[in-house]
Length: 119
Image (cartoon, rainbow, N blue to C red; front, side):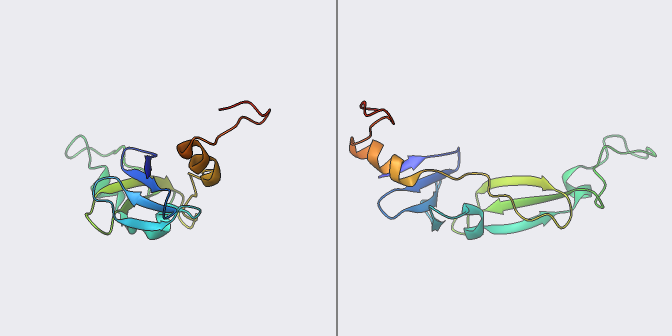
């Protein structure tokens, strides 16, 4: 009983776990930040944003003193699950938090709206 959440992330409601949609690898508990179960890589800005004009004195690359690129990969198959640009020292964001109990109720057909009507 899985529910697709993003292009590359699913939730296994039976086991309450985040999963890679490509290979089914369980990342971490569904009530936690899925990123904690991922392989994490910080990509150098020069690699992510190479100069568009060779030999130019300027670049569109974000300055590494102000911005870093963090990528999150599935440990099972290596699929990129997410990436984010963060200021140096900023903690990893917790960008998806779902009501797991409501998802389970909806999947089992027992969901009701807050006013008592069937959802």
